[in-house]
Image (cartoon, rainbow, N blue to C red; front, top):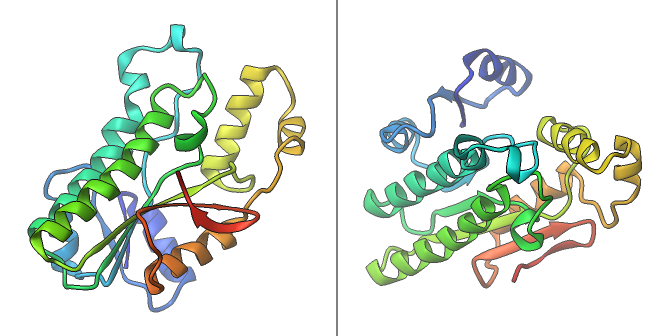
Amino acid sequence: MAVARGEPALAQFAWETPGVKTFAVDATVESAPDEVFAALEPDALVICAGALAPSAPLYEQNWKAFSANWETDVKISFLFCKAALRRPLKPGARIILISSGAALTGGPPNSGGYAGAKRMQMFLAGYSQKGSDRLGLDLRFMALAPMRIMPGTGVGDAGIESISAYMGIRPMEFIAGMLDMQTPAEVGRAVVALATQKPQGCSFAVSGSGLAPAG
C-alpha cells in the first residue's frame, strides 16, 4: 500500500502499478499512523517522506525554513515509530526510515537543518529498537541513507539545482564530480534486503558500492 498526501499522484501511481492499494493522508498529522495501520497493518513499513531542504545560506534563512525537515521528516518518523511500538505492530515487522548521506557528511551549508534531521532519523531507529527490545515486541527498526543525491528524481534534481547555484557551477559540473553514485533501483534493492534479510545494526548506507553498515 502506498501512502501520500496527494490523491491525484496516488491515482496515477495506482493506474501505473496494478495491485497496489493507495491511501491518502498527511503523514505529519498525529492520527495518521492509526489511520494507516487500520487500513493495512504492514509486515514492512518504509518511511520515505519529507520536505525539500532549504536553499539559502544560513544567514538568509528563518527558523521556519531551517526547521522544515524536522517538522516533516523527523515528525513523520517519530509518529510512525511510536505508533509501531504502542499498537504494537505484529512481531517480526520491519520499519525502515529513509535517511540521507547528509546525515553522515553534514550536507551542503545551504541546506539548513536537513542533515541534522536525517541524522535524527538514524537516532530514532536506534531508540525505537531499544524500545522494542525492552518491551519484547520482536520489531526491527532500521534507517537507510542513500549516500549520493540522485539525478532524475524530483528531490534529487531540486537538490542539484540548489547546490549548484550555491557553488556557482552548472548542475552537470556538480554531477560530474560525484563518485560511487547509487541509482534509485539500487536503493530499492537495499530496502528489500533490509526488509527480508537479517542485517545486524540499525543504520545502513547504500552507494554505488552496495549496502553497508553506517557509522
